[in-house]
Length: 285
Image 1 (spheres, rainbow, N blue to C red):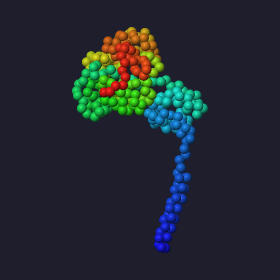
Image 2: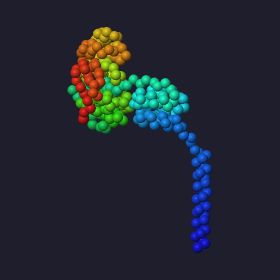
Image 3: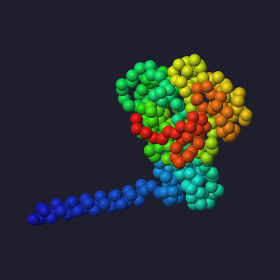
Image 4: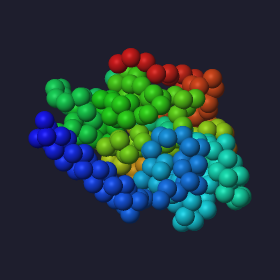
């Protein structure tokens, strides 16, 4: 009996010593919490997309709390509402966020783009790109294997007729899809502005582009010549539109011989390609 009591006493003493040691260690090694950063993090949407330029929502919250940045308008998914709430919490002037939506600058769908081979591999644009640039003749265009669709945290992207399309009503401007696209053909376009856009990224010579895709930009400069506001430039065989200068007059779209330029508007959550009067929404592959 005495042996049992002795064993119990020893275990109890060890437990007591361990408990005291843990209590002391918790005090010595305690990490102070930044209550202000935690409050800011609660305001942020939690997308952790990195569009703010920091590691995620927690990183942005810490930077604001520590004064490393005073810009409350870095969170695109949160918009002006989040910017205003953070400004009120920190006593700062709220920055203004211009709403943007991602647009896939490509019209290389099943009808327009020609194939050079049949890709039978991992269902990934990034992997397919490593195999001679993908199965399409145009090495600059969308492969339609859904890397951006899977990366989008808001379900705003769907594959439609072999290429990715974005629903701007759902898009929060987080730019995750921009980083996910190995072809770098996704751009952010102002939501509140009607503007022309060149839906092509090919910098190949006109004859090469025309052979690969019937809707590609051939760098003919007709759009540049007819633009009354100098909003269109052509560089490396590819036209570009300055959204700040563009007034969506439609002259460039009308002059484009391949239909590579479209007037983009937002209506009822659908990107309208007004130059061809067509509407595309997310669809099944």
